[in-house]
Length: 51
Image (cartoon, rainbow, N blue to C red; front, side, top):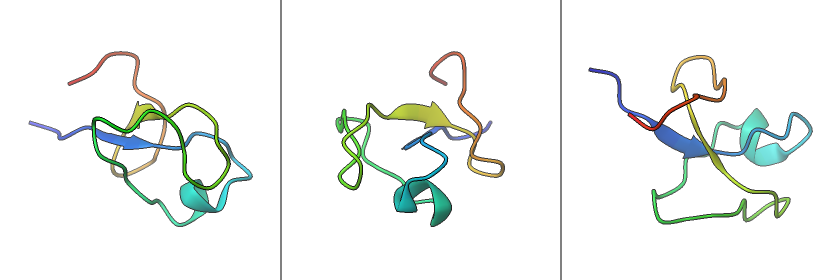
């Protein structure tokens, strides 16, 4: 089973570049302020559904 991480999907954000993961309760990126999404831990692409 793959574990979903919450991360920033803004391609220009340092949080995405460094692949910083957030808690499931976090709603917004602490670096750029955009909403967080569940992402793949390997490729950091946005997932359609929460796992």
